[in-house]
Length: 375
Image 1 (tube, rainbow, N blue to C red):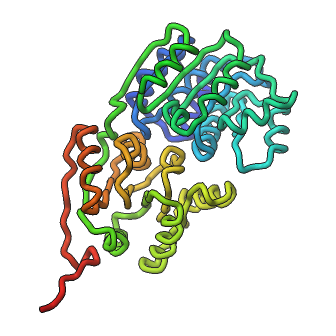
Image 2: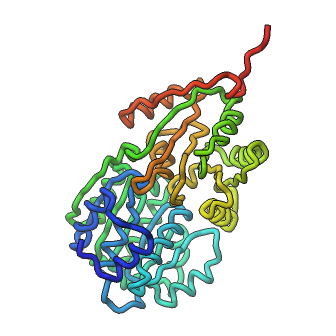
Image 3: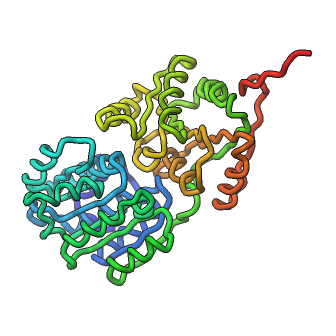
């Protein structure tokens, strides 16, 4: 792809050998400086798809000025992107800072004043910094909107538009979104100039995933989860639930029943607690993570063997994003969904949207906690 040696060194450090489909399509176009709209499922390598062409265009230039702003909907995702930016830009001498809520503004302000080149932010916290003189975006040349559809869903669009109004019009804008509803298309039309458009199966899960569904009543889900987690193949597992109160209770129950450490991550935990849980999961100290959808797009941990949808997701988009935590970068991954009788209709809607019937696996009654009564 013609990447500079210092950029290739960063890729080598991270273990990359060949581009994913979205990277192969997006990087050559973005390296020309053209605006870009890209649609792709989560877990397909979108972060490197926008960071690499930007770093390539910055290679050989003098560091010390803010030139890149990446907007993303969640703190977890911002921290993951910041981590990749630091790794990929290390040999080129570029620095990055994550500007997110739940953390003190002082250290973020100090990092900005020191002259970082890349700023990865959630919209609300960046708006907070824009109230002060240290947040000068007059030198920004690259703007990335990551997970644009999710930012709409979370109500960030007004903040996003305020931020964009502070960035020079002479810039390259890259918009990445898993889905492209009319509201996202309207935003793209208003802020991008003659953009190229690429897509890599935006409405389907990655092909490297193996999907299974287990019919089970709600009261039998916890027992079924314990049974499945006892299998040696379930080495690194994310369990998704709908409600944060369920996440805490289920994590405690899993730890007791399996004697394997489980942590929870949701909006009710502090940022420090969420970071600590993610770090323990990443290191393998905690092999099971029970999460709400706040983490569905923010967890970028390699070698996740399985995702379990403890509750059927609300939409096919949520199913795709949750499932994308495993099978990343072309690796194999298992996706398991627990389907209670009242969730069958939602499951059928997901299957219709992704164009695939998910095989049902029926275990003996005792495995799902629904033992037959003796006569």
